[in-house]
Length: 368
Image (cartoon, rainbow, N blue to C red; front, side):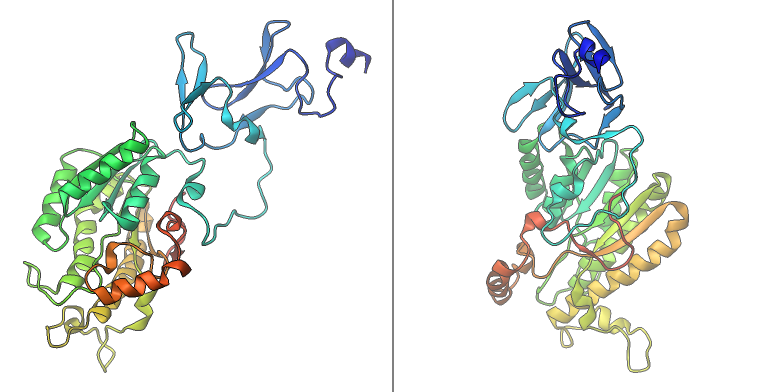
């Protein structure tokens, strides 16, 4: 005790509380060190406990790390528009050799996108999201871009795509985000998109097949196929085939297919138990919008499962997910009856900003 008193270390009750004249700081790569201003020296060990520590995870949403002219790290809070030399993560430090928690952290229907991605640094990751100018696609694109990923919004309408890009940049001006043209109702457009992306010579770590149409009247695409089937499934199927080589080269990589629980309420086999191709792209006489949507979502899951079986040995996993029941987005815009149903259900369903806590329908874990 005499030695501690002589060193000025007995003034505090808590083992973690710093004595007078000491300051806790962090290095650029997240290690904690301690500055003794009285003796003008620094050390890695806590002056009382002797423990070495590091900060846990990435910076909170809205924060950014910079370096001043003298080489000292400081932090910018873009939301409150202030700067500080105090690392906001110091409240969540861990010991150099932390004990692994016995159970895995879980999320539920109230988890937000930012909570799920908290502490994850996606810098260097390249992501393509189809239908990303609105709804679930936009929220996914924004969340990933704000955590450092380079996000490409693959949109049919470039004007809306560029508007979505600007909305993300307004939240963080350094976000790496861009829009590219992709019309899933045209296989030629899918091919052009794949060629344009490959010309950028970029990797591809995450491909989110999100775009979909729901409740639309019967129509044929320029390729002669029923529109719901092509947009929701076949267009994405073709896109993945065209980008498969890039995904393999970028491994570990993953494909995420946004499906739906409604896949349970349909069948794509005939009476003999064989696949009935006429059910996938039906004639106008045999068409019902709800069934067409359900069948396309079933195709999504079957495709994702088989894709995972074939590509997982090469470092590319595939997951199909259910985003939640009757999420209020623009998907119901094709018929006023569906719009009314979604409005009535809105108070009892997840909002758009909660959407990333979806339920796996095939392989688990969207982001690692």
